[in-house]
Image (cartoon, rainbow, N blue to C red; front, side, top):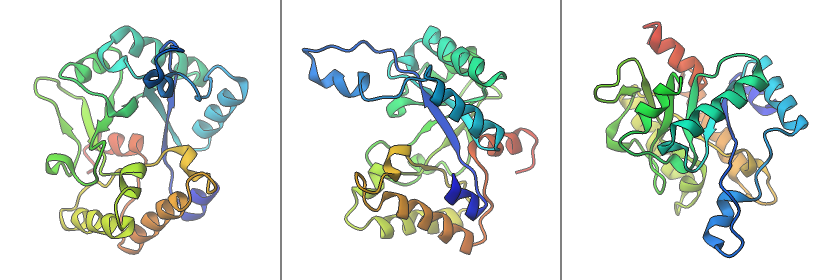
Length: 227
């Protein structure tokens, strides 16, 4: 937050409330069930309220199976709203999980936008979606595509070159460039270079006179027909 404040930008933080049971004898399940924070922890709740009160966006990071389960979506939204004391608008699904019913289920659960559309193993504008778009037969529910995700970008032979290619494409097409960075990757010891690259991207876009919004602000601008 401090570094973003220095640059005059804010992010939207999506908080995970994973309920997938831990299965000791099924190792592929472990990464979905352990090693996460507990959203009911007092310190986590205080951090969530602080972010919200300080102008950062706060949304739901839908649990692994919630993309196909309206009851999970409803419960996870309710828990975060109880922590905040007001409604929550946005969601990004864990692992960007989507199927042909996810957006309909999200809207039925009361969300106002989704931010899960993008590559899980590459960078760039998927299907050349440069701006928020609407799914067929689902009115007034913007889908905000992402173009750069930390792990995908850092897997490239030259991450900065790959980032610059996307930035130039965004500038050329007057696109909305959404960056998805996981909070834990700002730990320099465990993820060297990740945090530096995030802020380098922001500074590069500032040098190119980009306008910055967090995702919630961007959706608000869309709905008010300002952009």
